[in-house]
Amino acid sequence: MLKASNRSAKFCYLKALEAEQQADNARMLSDREFWLNIQKRWLGLAVNADFCERLAAFVANLQQRHRQPVCLACDVPMRIGQLRCSSHRTTEYHYECPACAAKQTVVERDTDPRSSLIAIASPLSVVPIRRAKASAGIK
Image (tube, rainbow, N blue to C red; front, side, top):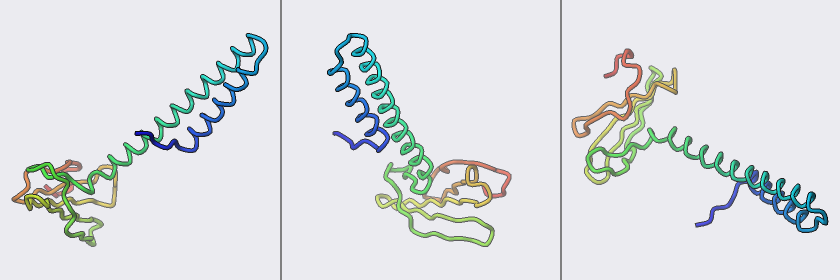
């Protein structure tokens, strides 16, 4: 399936097309080789721009992944049932599996968003999603 390129990649592809046209119109072999080399460079930049966009989307997906955990029992994405904010600068996300009704709670502390995610397993759920900062008192 074809995917629309981002603006940077589109610009690079257009420049590569212009370079190809210049190479086709070149009268001297050295000019033709020059424009084909330029075309090759623009195509490389376009591929790099597409890669960067895909990589950024992948990383963004990973960063948001904790917000919708997958049920460990049946491998189905869990749905959020309740969201609770406390005065201790924490947010609790209560999830429930739509297939098997397993429950899981994820606690996020606002102090350090990079390493503050702790999952608390309910009796129906088995294992936490990710464990960080065990000294915080939530186990």
